[in-house]
Image (tube, rainbow, N blue to C red; front, top):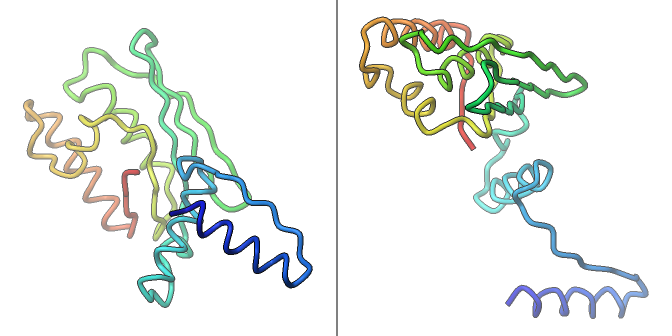
Length: 157
């Protein structure tokens, strides 16, 4: 179906004297995800897609063998990277430690679009009461409350 639409668009462009080349681009790439979300917002009739609000793309890179994680935050005209030391003896899982570090980099009122956060970190952020240990539960609940007080939203992609 997509190739039929592509051919139809190319034919119409050719009739108008416009040379057009269509190439498949997977929407898993960062800029394609943004274009995909904008197109969906327009299709749904959203007056202002959420992506036009202040946001930052967050990438969490954590390797099990390393005692640290790299947190990269990219917003319009700025990129911030931090190496976050992970405490393996902490009651908070290392992946959640990395996520908490990313949240501290947010500006008030900003929406964080987080990629590569572990399922554990996502689950604990969304529902801190799932933490098995009381200290982890308290730390996660406090971080989430602080983020909400500053108007920071965290969305997982």
